[in-house]
Figure: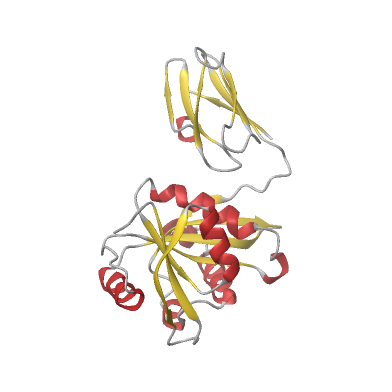
Amino acid sequence: MERHLDKDSMRHVEDWYGNNAAVRCPVCGKLFIVSTFINKGQRDCPICHKSSAEITSAAVTIQAPDELEIPTVCTRAELLAKNRLEEFISLVEEGGAINPASVKAKLPKAETIAFIEREGKLVAVAAKKQAIASYAQSVSLNSGYALQNDVPELGYVAVSGSCRGQRLSAKVVRRVLFEFGEGPVFATTSDEKMKSVLAGCGFRWVGHEWRSERTDEMLSLWIRKGAT
């Protein structure tokens, strides 16, 4: 895959100033700088080394392998406008770890969704959820960990049954985490594979487990970047 981006398509580049550009790796989602001065105009992604960027006075070119599935990001409103909100809800419901009342309300807490699709169908999703003070207080009470009321949540992570075991959840989680910026994020889970994904994305387990009233499973609270 090769993308040629000129200065009229700044939406594809995070920032571009003179001979320097900040681009987002299409593989791992990390931002990195490419510079004609420091890098002689070319640089591999310093995190995953699976993509590269080149800058000239007229364009930035980003290269990555064609076979990589790169998660797409959109808002809940955009999914609704594309008549795909119900598809997102259905996939999350298939995952099972969701309150039926949230499904019925069409997952109103979802702000931004990262997804992977195959043959025109969503097969993996993860979302940035709104910070809800009452929910944060409930999590604090259950876990014994003082969670701030304004900390947003990572959630609605689901993979289609036919595509599980292919590390798709890690891809969509890593991608949507960039939508949170550098601030704290929390997640709750009872799933062992999800715990592994969270640990690999810089989360740590805090507080103690508590029993879910809905599924009877033991939930745990995970925090990224030192939320208090």
